[in-house]
Amino acid sequence: MAKVSGPLFSMEASGSYGGAIVFAKWKGRQYSRQLVIPANPNSADQEEVRNRLRVTGALQKWVNTTTTVESGQTDTDKTRIIAATPGGFAWNGHLVDNCVGKGGLTYAAAEAAYTALTAPQKTAWNDAAIALSPALAQVYQTQAGGTAGTPKTAGEVFFIYRYGLSQLGLAAAPGGTPPTYA
Image (cartoon, rainbow, N blue to C red; front, side, top):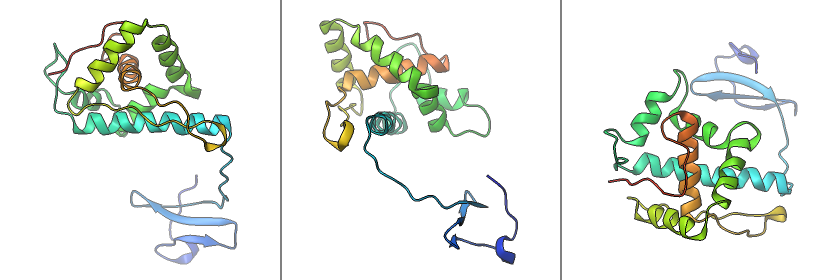
């Protein structure tokens, strides 16, 4: 994306021009880009990405609102994530990047690891997620065509979060026993 200074010989520009280019401001910086007409195909791949964003959005909200601390730690997860985030990056974007991974590989690995758990282990993760303050809830999911899918349980959402923390180097890879927070 090109940086622009004084687009169209003005100090600021916003909106589309000639049906081909868009001028806008992001974080105080002017930029221009090609005009793209969005499409909403509701394909299986598109819904999969939306589902991941729903889960990681719920995780960001939880991290941002909780004041609880993992057993054995002195700082909240948010403080630890901020400290692990490279300069110039936002902590929540860094968390999402590590929960999803390139092409969704980390997210898929977390799902596979959760699926491999026994029923009592999944119940333990779900109970632990509900016991958090605030509690993690199940996350609505969709499938191809935009129809309702099977929601992610609170336990699986918590497991995906802990898997993401392990990618950041802030926790061990999650197993059958969930961590405790107080």
